[in-house]
Length: 449
Ligand code: PHE
Image (cartoon, rainbow, N blue to C red):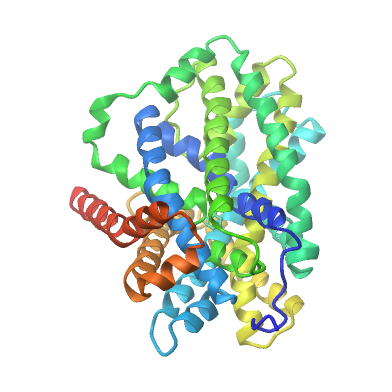
């Protein structure tokens, strides 16, 4: 007996799980979000702190999250209920489910733009600069109340179709194709970037730190949020994925592989984007539109730029898609079990709710652009609340759960780490270092704002 929730599906292979988890991690976060956050936060210094956080907080927490799902063998809420019956710990899972719904709501808007840009490149419409420039085209496009919704719905519809088919037949199969293709395309793009004149300036921006930025508290805060967002930790999406593992499939090596892969992807994406940005003399801190305004104008001036544009937007769409699968699976697994809906019905219901919420994020660029807090529109707010609050808070709670609620033997057994030294290192990181570091960073940034 599997002892799991209603019809709990499983991964066919551990490698399939690894590809799917990498698919979740590698996404718009590595390319769209990483490049604009790094660009705004000073490049190399940000990168250094980001790498430090990935290593010291991110990967240990990823294992923490996986260990809860693998031991719990149920969805985000169910796994906590099983490991901590009659407590409130399952609210961590519920917050994750809500976080996942929120992220996918705005993620599908940006993914819809990506899909539309891909279409524009395939039809040739963006091979040359549209009247008024790419900036005006982007603005006209995002402020249009109807058209972006169509592309957002198309993107979500495809995601729904895959998630409906379940773990083995849907999510695992899709990632088996998406991830290798993604790796090849990204390496091709970065290699091309390195051949551009002026590429060395981009590399210097990314790899030569400006030490004075270390005194800037907001850099730590942004780097922490980015590490969480990029590794998909803190909202139980990874927990849900690990709950579909078989008992014999071990966690630690897979976790390190997934964490490193995500980081390598971010680095290669950084090389690809900043070499292009610098060789065409563009400012790196142009914010979220970097990928949609700056890159197209760079592509236009490049030799064979339209092919580069097509490849780039195929890449971005596929990366977004593999992450969206995990974001949808998270609430679907929960309502599938608790509401007794079939997987199909659960997927359709959650997909529709997410679409409706996403409409608000989309309209925030046009008819609802007056709804702003501190200059942030609805999409920015959803992004900030999830990446900078819900994800770190979820991660902190999971560290406390494993480090303080579970007893030491149970925590270590669930982590499946074999070496006694590594057991000690991991356990102390989760029990002490992660909570302390995170609380300090949260405090510093609160007083900074
Ligand atoms: N990690 C994904 C990305 O980089 C986003 C994501 C966050 C996916 C949280 C799942 C959970 O784009």
